[in-house]
Length: 196
Image (cartoon, rainbow, N blue to C red; front, side, top):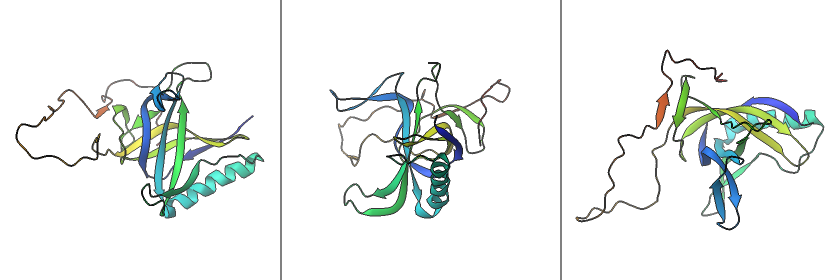
């Protein structure tokens, strides 16, 4: 049986988030595709100073389990262009799309004040805090997330292109119906227990 230890991460910056729905890897497309039986996942980049106490929590959980996992849920971040260390630490968090009894599940969301949020478009560069359980097995020490506290949402961006300031170019209309964060109404009942 896996050793389980509760955790709350330090505040960090989101990297490669797949938090809108569960995904699985697809070899034919060489990428992740949505699948209810897949996983939610994200990486969280944290400064080395803030990361050290959190790493100690993870290492203590591993030591207490008496198991030496093959893979750890953290590593030093490297610059994608130079391959040089950035001085930050990159943590990996996951959550199964289906519970143990095969019911759909998803991470609970909270705003910066700890209030429940129905939905949010958590994009790369957003700042969040993650809670959940450290599960230690022989293959890996897995950071199983259960809740996300959104400290700051980064603007959504789909490309690294610079804007082109010319006449007769395509400019998309703003989506007025899209809401990045939907707060639960004050009098709306909820059974969600946000762990923040």
